[in-house]
Image 1 (cartoon, one colour):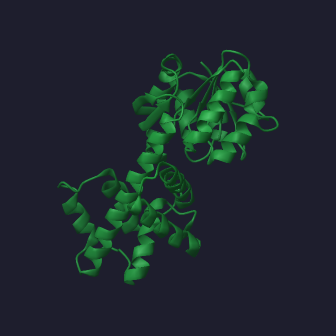
Image 2: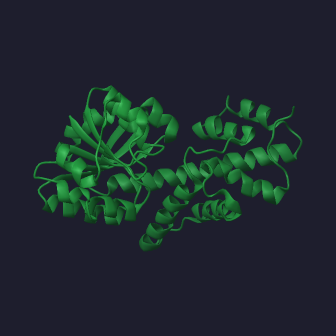
Image 3: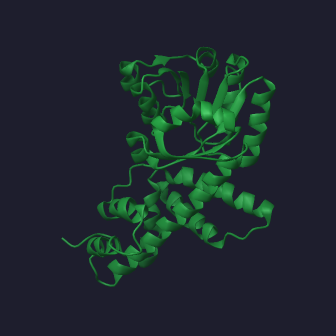
Length: 295
């Protein structure tokens, strides 16, 4: 396929790389430019999002937040300017479900189809092509794009109509945040009690407490490797979506609110750009004890 990819950052670049490796023709555009590695692999750089849309049949966006998607799609030089009937727009960012439905309607009014397809799995999953992809939109459009999804991910689910993919991603981010919080609490507790947190982690990985968070993020906590990954600022954005939606739905999310406050504490101390596993820093500050394994 002729694929356009807009947003070639930590996640977008390796995702686009998977498509090139699979033999698809790729047109790219990003605020920071198209990475040289993608150009070397055969990608074509475009000056604007509209140029990407003119060249591609399927246009993928992977940018940080709802206003960014709105600008890329409908701003000056945006995707909408380059669309012609029959093309497909796939937003793989993590944004608000309500606005997603509005974006889909605008794209549909131009004679094109729209999928919201946010992902989970982080940079590791993007590089390995093993992302979880949660999709909202028409089934026929999903089937058309599915071969592309299969090059970027392994667990691919059409959840429902437009907006359902983003709703699923919000739920995902609630679970991930609370798992990071649980692992953080467990390791801080173990370390403060005098146990070697590295050995505690090793023991827990053989039991019912095992999880991907314990496997990957706990190791980051122990090694103090908080380079993203997935930035705290982005997880704050996702939890803000969760809490705002919960207010509209009159649903209580008390644990999510606590996780958001702890992320905010780390961000307030200069950690907004750190990996979300750095949430442990907020608990360490309270305990006056850093999670480090014994020498």
